[in-house]
Amino acid sequence: MIEFQFDSLFNFLRMAPHGIYIWPVYGLGLLVIGGLAIWIRYQHRQAIRKIRRIMNRESIHEPKA
Amino acid sequence: MSVEHRFLVRELKLVLARPGDFFKPMWFLILVISMVPLALSPDSKLLGEIGSAMIWVATLLALLLNADQLFRDDFVDGVLEQWLFFNRPLFWLVILKLFCHWLFYVVPLILVTPLAGMMLSVPNDVMIALLVTLLLATPALTCFSALGAALTLGTARSGILGVLVMLPLFVPVIILAAGVLTRASDGSDILPLLALLGAFSIAAATLLPLAVGVALRLNIGGSS
Amino acid sequence: MGWRWFHEWGSPKWFYDRAGRWQRVCGFLALALLLVGTLWGLGFAPADYQQGNSYRIIYLHVPVAFLAQALYVAMAVCAIVLFVWKMKLADVGMQALAVVGFGFTVLALFSGSIWGKPTWGTYWVWDARLTSMLILGFLYLGLIGLRSAIQNPDLAGKACAILVLVGVVNLPIIKYSVEWWSALHQPASFKLTEKPAMPASMWVPLLINLLGYYLVAAYLVLASMRTVILDRERGSAWVREVIERD
Image (cartoon, rainbow over all chains, first blue to last red; front, side, top):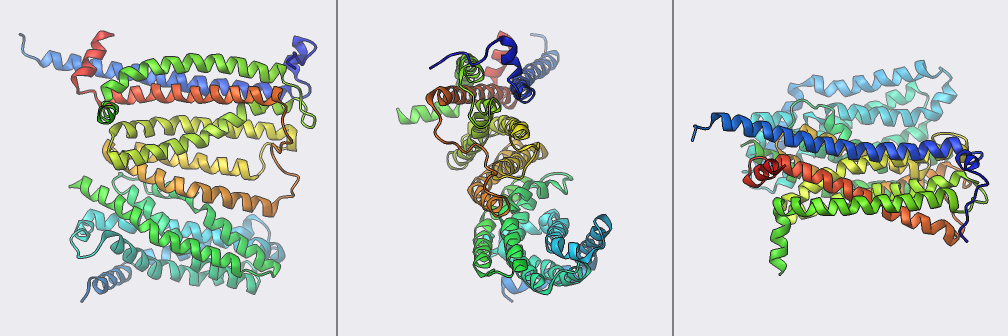
């Protein structure tokens, strides 16, 4: 039942005749999902940085113990 | 004088005090419709075929011009907060306000559409169908745009955000009305679709004011 | 037992810690499933009789399109939880879901459109599915726009909740009316993915991909929620501890 459908790796990449449609779609998928993941991680780091800055600012104004 | 009476009289006075707001949508409609033959072709047969749809879209956009104003002035003046103290449920006051808006701004605009129809050579039976669909659909559309206006009350400048937020929700009404217009130009029976459109409008006009009331209360509470 | 569960879910700190673990699990599982599912679909599933190899786009398009809609419904559930139980976490969920959902909708639109080229010869057709997906995209956009326009986070959350609930009630009406409209104006031959029964070697990878993308969405939503929580709770002691720990 399960067997590789293409004669060669080259034919796999070509997916004749629709290769130029299929691969960009999956590439786009990688881009969008990967992009979202990276963006969210970036936002996370930004949030941490911002809170650290606030904490530093507050500790400067604290009276020396 | 009852609350309703005072409400209506006040709305009427506001309309008369600002004739600009009254005429702007009509001016917009005629202007946009004038662009259509310029952008397409003066061929009256072609215009007649697409005319009713173009008038529908242009009327829709003209209505959205004023949508942001629905609650904003009253909100800024503090009148909206007074609404909470009238002896009436909030959604009823919303219905009153929207009814006044429909009667005083929307219906006059609809009455101008035959002029646009003449400019685009829309056949008479289609024109009548157009008028009826507009009269039936606009209550629902007014309620939807009121929700958009109520949700964006607190935001700074966004005139168009309320509109953008609501536009996808107009789709069923637009499709139904377009269905009626196609049937009208074919000459087939439009009554069943009109009934559906009317039913949808009634449902929207009864349920949406509840949501609008909640949104208004959010913003009124938030500002105090 | 019931009330403790309820209070735990109301606590951002509890969620932040737990979600970090769930996020990693979802992420790894998603990666594994998508690798297997995509390679299977691309390389090992038999070619379609009518569409040849182009149908392989289905292994991305269908799961992503399904999720785009499912995430909207999840937002509606969050909106209900927000109004009924006043759980702030539900609002955080709604905020995260909107962005991820919009991303999936865009992906579904582009994949559907590109699939259309070999199938119907053009990049865009106003068929029922694509048009509904476009409108869904506008709904998501409206939510994102509304949230960013309102400064007060509580107000923003409740306003978005109202919009989501009105939207979710209208969603079936919109879909039905768009299908009706599409059937009126297009010949019956224009149907996307009309399937005669798919053999197992075709739909099993589809299922695997569906699960994989679902877990990807879960990973993204959890990660986003954790960021939003950090930002919203920045004044509290537990957040300070977390920051110092890193």
